[in-house]
Image (cartoon, rainbow, N blue to C red):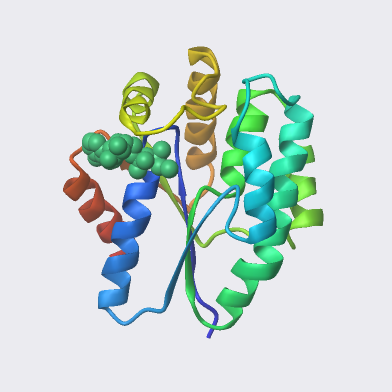
Length: 203
Ligand SMILES: Nc1ncnc2c1ncn2[C@@H]1O[C@H](COP(=O)(O)OP(=O)(O)O)[C@@H](O)[C@H]1O
Ligand SMILES: [Mg+2]
């Protein structure tokens, strides 16, 4: 039987990476064979593209180049990791996926959503997640959390506040018209967010 494909979406510092690990542990305790991955990245080729994408100044690449880079990374990730895992019956938990491209390069940078969707169809076998867990919190709170993390801020953390506001509004717009989306209140304590995610998936 085909595995389930669950993506974690949301802005910087929402808690995606934290919660992927927690949900994976929960599912494994129930005997589910789980693969954890992230985007951009997840395969050696896609991780090489990630290094180009997340480092450097905010304006290192145009929006169009960003969309092509992240879609190229996703094409490798889908072909070599996600699709084979799902076909083998594994569940895939992915820290960001195509809705990040629609939110960041579409709603955030103004690229055509139809064009980005067509690129997804061409490059990624039109593979969509079964469930999208949207971890939502105010932009300022998320950026403040991200700034607490160790290491240098990535390219998107250094984008302007109004960009991040458009990204958040983009996620809200997609959630409003897509039943695969579940909005999770990411302002809550880590354990409360974990329980909210478990409740959504149990339902
Ligand atoms: N619910 C939460 N409440 C407070 N801090 C959190 C919460 N979830 C995660 N954090 C912390 O906020 C920072 C960003 O979390 P992270 O999981 O890296 O977010 P993301 O992957 O969405 O950018 C980390 O330092 C993490 O420990
Ligand atoms: Mg993260």
